Figure 1: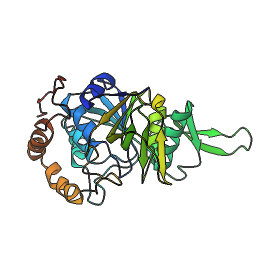
Figure 2 (figure 1 turned 135 degrees about the vertical axis):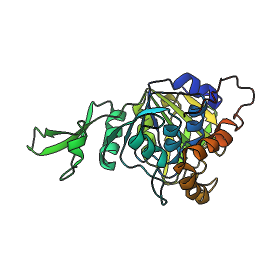
Figure 3 (figure 1 turned 45 degrees about the horizontal axis):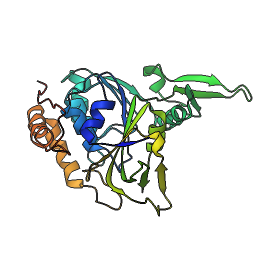
Length: 286
């Protein structure tokens, strides 16, 4: 059953050094506030998992939180590269990072397998792909009924998955509306799940035709964080901040400018709960 707690407390309880961590959202409802709280709490040696790493993973990698990235595409959507990710890969700054790259189809199927409690996912894919040569976690299995050779990848089972949603009720049931990716699967595949929401309401109904309701028994913590997906968007609440995405390209290209931006906008940002006593670290990588 989900507890309704401050974000600082949820991260302290359910995100630890060395964890496998998924922050999911598909262009929409990306849990930026949660990722920045992880940065403030100084988590290290994380394996970050995400179908489409964008700005929040660039920030986490640039602040030295991650030792490995499992992903299927990484970039600043509509703008260009993730320069903090590139710096970590190409120059080991602020620390080297291991990459495990997959296709979108592989990641989606791996999340499905994790949610179903299966050890791996089998699907038609990777025909003619060079990823097999650089990723030992892409294998081949033969269907015992047809003899067809299929691609296989390990199931994704995060220690903790974090998503953002529009609202939750007072029992901790959560409603997502609009464009959704693999948020449902990420929550069901994880040992623990944190959901940040725009608001708590008495009644989730009526949902739209493209909606997902996650039951309270699948969630450990619900945190009220209005604007918690910015600069991405939350359908029905606020639009995507395209200016912020464009600006990030120049900010993230330069190490010193990046560190200054993080110090001003993340470390100096007020906590979501002024009464929280969770310690934050201001130590910046050099």
